Length: 177
Image (cartoon, rainbow, N blue to C red):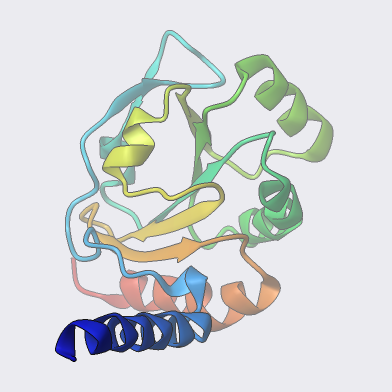
C-alpha cells in the first residue's frame, strides 16, 4: 500500500514547491556575494583595450556596476534610467559589457549615450560567473571598501532607483570610512 501512496505524496510535495515558486519575485534572488569584497578580475576596457579595468576601481567611493550587452533587450529598456542616474552624479556607474561584440557596444554607447565612467569587456563571461551573474542586466552596488552591498537582477526602473538604489547609496556615503 505504501509503495502506491509514495508517488502521490511526492507529487503533492512537488506541486507545493512549484506553487510557492509562482509567488516569488525573480528579481529578489539572494546573492552569496552580499557583504563580501568584489571578486578580483582584470579585463580590458571597452574604450581603451590596452588599459585594464579591475575591482580596484571601486575602492574609495560608493560605486555601481551594471552588467549589460547590446544583444540584451532588457538592457536597452533600462538604458535611459542609467543615463538619468549618471546625470544625477550620485555615484560612478561602471559597466561590465557581457558576451558582446566590442564594436557594436562602442557604437551603441555613441548613438544612445554613455552613462558609464568606464566599461570592462567580458567577452567570454567568465568574470560575470565569478560575480554570480544569472544574465543581463544586473546591477551591483559597492561601498567605499569595495564590498558588495546590493544586487539587482533585471532592468532597473525609476521606482527601483528612487526606492532602493538612491537611499542605499546615500546610506553608504554617510557611513564612516
